[in-house]
Image (cartoon, rainbow, N blue to C red; front, top):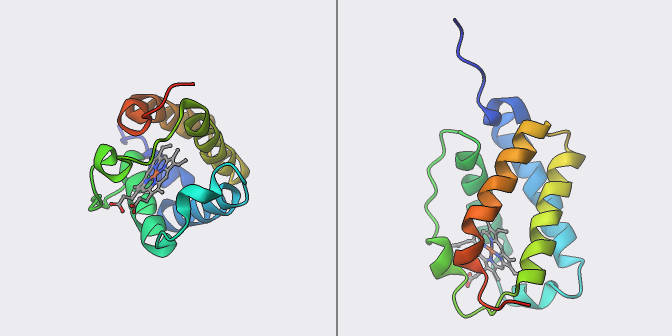
Amino acid sequence: MVASASLYEKIGGGPAVREVVDAFYTDVLGDTDLKPYFDGIDMARLKRHMVVLLCSVLGGPEGYRGRELGEAHKNLGISDEHYAKVGDKLVTALRDHNAGEDVVQHVTTVLNQVRPSIVEKTG
Ligand code: HEM
């Protein structure tokens, strides 16, 4: 029996993930609640790290080399509300790029798993 394609292959591999991440950060930076977090941040580097992270979450060959997520978001004071907004934007970007529901489901599960490492403020 042939092994089923990974979610990474189903979405279209690295190039598709890059398009999703580009659209995602355009949306995030266009949100006045979220934009201030990214003032002075090297967005090219952040995008690179996010692309690799998302690729590996989907089963791609890339290995994440950025900081551990808790460390990267430490002292940013991210609230539950802002986390939810960012998560929704990622899911929207995936859907806009015709990611299947299996990809969306998996990413949503991972977003719930990493939430405690990133959120520092409730409410
Ligand atoms: C939703 C899940 C999230 C994931 C998977 C994620 C992923 C990442 C990754 C991979 C990095 C790069 C780490 C590095 O360069 O070593 C990063 C950095 C960053 N993230 Fe997130 N992030 C998430 C949510 C958020 C939210 C909700 C905010 C703000 C509202 C945010 C703001 C930032 C900022 C400002 C940085 C740069 C920090 C720095 O370089 O000092 N992230 N994130």
